Length: 117
Image 1: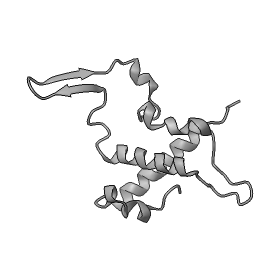
Image 2: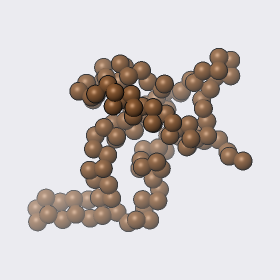
Image 3: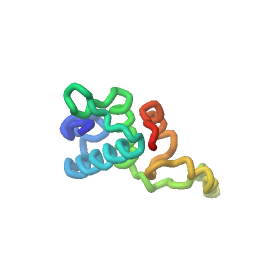
Image 4: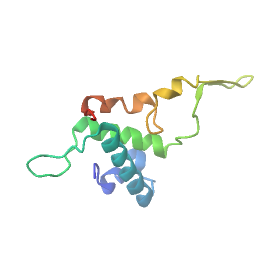
C-alpha cells in the first residue's frame, strides 16, 4: 500500500475520516495509478512496491479530492454569488481528465508512465 491508513488518519486534513473509507479509497487510487502508468513501482531487488516521494504526495492530493466533495463542482468553471451566475466548462476540456480526476491532479504521474505494446 502506498500509505498506511494510520499515517493518513494522523494528518490534519483526515483526522475525522472513516478508517474503512480511507483504506478503500487508497486501494482504488493505488490500482488506478498502476493501471494508468503501466508501472508497478516494484523494486527489482526486493520485489516490493516502492513509491517515490512525489507519487506519495500526489496520492494525498487525489485522496483529498475524493474525500473533499469530488462531485460537488464537476464541470463548473466559475461561480458568482451576487445575482447567482454559474459558468460550466467546455465538454472537450473534460477530455483531459483521467479516471475521474482532473488532468492537473494526475500530472505528477507523467514521468512514471511506461509504454504499452
